[in-house]
Structure formats: C-alpha cells, structure tokens
Length: 393
Ligand SMILES: Cc1ncc(COP(=O)(O)O)c(C=O)c1O
Image (cartoon, rainbow, N blue to C red; front, side, top):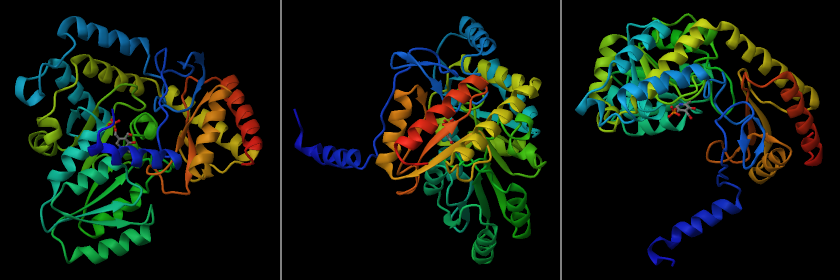
C-alpha cells in the first residue's frame, strides 16, 4: 500500500537514486577484518575505518567477553540516570593518559560528542569559525548552538586569518573548529598554524581527531603529532575507527570534561553503551600505546598503495593518511566503478553527494594494516583493470 501523505518521499528517493546518490548496503558474513566475507565471498576490505585491524582482535574480544560475564549486556539506562561501572572510570583515566590531558570522557559515539557538546560551548554573541570540509556531526552541532558561524575555505590559513580578523571585534568568544584528518580526502589539518592564529586572535580551538587516533602522532592522534596536547582546548575522537570498536571520546582539562557531561544532551539523555564496549575500548588504547610497530606498518602500507595508484595514473587528491581516495568526478561513474571493484573482489566505497560536493565523487580506500603485500598488489591489479575499462586512466 502506498500512503499519499508520504508519496513525496518516494519521489525524492527515486530522484536521488537516478542521480546515483543512494547507499547500496552490503551484508558481512564474518567480522569486519582485512579479508571479510561479504555477500557470500571473501573480499579485500578497503571500505572500513578499521585501520589497525582491531575490530576482531582476540584481546579486545576477551576484554569484551569478560565484561559481559561480569556486567551483562546492557548499561541499564543513561549513565547520568542509573550509573555506570568501574570500566567507564578506568576508560576515562586511560583516555586522559593516552591523550596527555588532565581529563578524559567517553560518549556513546563520536557523532554524539560533536552533536551534543558544540551546542553548549558558546552563547549568543559568540562565534564558531569552521573549516568548510568539517564532518557533518560538527555542522549539526554548530547548527544547534545559539552562537553564529563563519566558514573558512578548506585548510586555507590566509582565509582563516581573514575570518578571524573580521569576527574578532564583533563577537565575544571564538572557537576555531576543525577535523584533524579530513574524512573524505585524507588530508591533515594544519593544526600548528590554526593554533597560532587562534592564539593571535584570542580564540579557542576544537579538533575532531576521529581519523587521527591510531594513525597520527605514533597513534596518539593529531595533538601528539604537532606536540599540542596541552594547547588544544577541546579534543574529541572516536573508538569506531582505528580502535576497532564503538564510542566517542573527549579529552581536555578536567573542568571541560565536567562541563561536557553535565550539559551534552546526547550524553545525558541517551542510554550508555554496554559495559563491554568500555572494556574493549580501553584495551584498544593500551594496544596502540604498546605496539608502535602496528602504526608504522599501517603507514608503510598506505605509502606503498598511494604511490602505486599514482604511478598507474590515478588521482589520489590531497591524501596524506591511510584514507586514500581515487577521484572520479561523476556520481554514477563512481558507483559503477565501486560495483566493478566489488565484482573483482575489492570492497571500496563510492563517496557521492551529499558527502562530497556534486562533481567530486570518488572511491575512498582506507588501508587496513591486516592487508598483506599480496592483498595490496591484487587490489592494485584490479584498480588498473577497472580504471582502464571505465576510462579513468
Ligand atoms: C570526522 C568524523 N567525526 C565524527 C565522526 C563520528 O564518529 P562515530 O562513528 O564514532 O559516531 C566520524 C565518523 O564518520 C568522522 O569521520
């Protein structure tokens, strides 16, 4: 039965589908890992955020299972309402230690840090200064704030300075907010320059390190990479990327953490994740800390993959990290490209509008340290074949 009231949504969906802007969902028959079984066959995984291959690591599994045995599967309620376990306290201490800050806090997701905290940090008469390529969760969080917003051209420090100049006399408080690693292009924010400019204009700084943890700064993230652990006011991140698990994190001064969980509606008014998640997350941070070689291997593999793609004639855009896009342009061509890759045994995602501007569709590859040299060579062989077939190289 088709209801008239919602028929317009079907039309909108069909138009999106015609433009190649809908999401084809795929079912995994194994854990997410370097070579999972997807839609019935083993593929090379290039679509997950599981950079350090920890999502199915036996040590995280053991930590989670032990926690389930002790604390069960549900948090029971929101952490603010019905309490939490020692596992969260331990995780919060581990986050602070890992990030080199006074305080640490975990949230239900990375999205919920940005969507819950950004609305609370500034008031009417204040302003957010935001990179144009910031993640959607930052955009949503800022939209919910009573403060104004000014957007600067992506990673353009001259434009950031222009914006800071123009807002400095008009507004009270200013926060410059940026992704650390930009999730669609894999480039790294110029955090040293952003911090210098922010200091010069009396602004605070907020960095989203979701794709930096486990990757930059020997795994400790972008503030460690730039030696700015004590300088960035608000450091948020995620356990759902290199840490292989689930959940968001915040690091900063203890009073920032106290303010954050007492005001973020996402933290206060939504159920906590299961205790087992906290146990696995803590284990992931310990592994990253103790196994720098794992992070180095990831870098070696991404260097190899990107340079070989470039040698084949592909455009990998601004990539500087294990996020290695292959620029295609048209959305439908990008989707067709991803489908052909999948038929040949590669799982890599086509990224289309609204994730990126129209005309800038791409295939996003994300390197997983569990991929062997043979896997990467096979992936490159398939890329060459499909690239020639679709006239991209
Ligand atoms: C830059 C950035 N920020 C925030 C998030 C949200 O993180 P989570 O998956 O933990 O909700 C993501 C995930 O897509 C991201 O890429």
